[in-house]
Image (cartoon, rainbow, N blue to C red; front, side, top):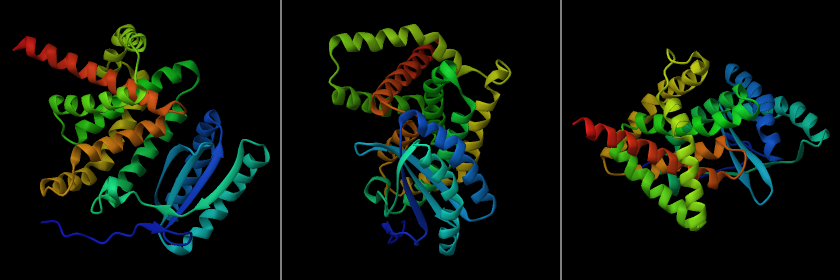
Length: 297
């Protein structure tokens, strides 16, 4: 039996977590992530001022990045602020950022579980690192094409890491895509449009999902990002799976929430619409793999 731990829910400034809201445009958010957050977090981690960080994209309704830094010691918080200030001030003065707030971090314990919220934050950390590194790799129209393909592969790899079979993946993805389709209340014409987009991109999707470094060295850095994240999260995921064995966690709901956050971090705009399409496409891809496997039996 897993002992229930009383987990801290709220963190004001000066208490472990430093939480920034950085208001900026959709396109500029990627620039801030790659030109400010990536180098700063690398330095902060190297100097042991923080031990993890993560971000999400949000609108309230104004678009902004929500970035959380976990300080190794509470006394480091003001040093972290001082490291960030010159970078943020430069972007604020050039109107690329129009507002900055420091706020109280409220953990979503109901969504991620009292015994698994800290493990979730570790997953958020490695996910954020991976996606910021990926965003820094891509550029132009080709980069935007690779962005949604990378999302498919990253979700599939995440499900592999949680030891999901293809059938289990399909069950989870079916629930997700139905939920999002109902949310958007797609018309017949829109469904036809989604179907057409998948058919037109099917070969591209299959090639990208099945590539190996040997097949295409162009994607070696992308493969390295996915493998590195899997290596760093293996022990974290093992702990989560062990907790699930004790029936204290709804694993499908937990994994779905993390997949949602992955897509949130990756797409600059129209997040939920992109999510719906990604879930639909990944479902179709895995379903086609299963169909081919049955034909071989």
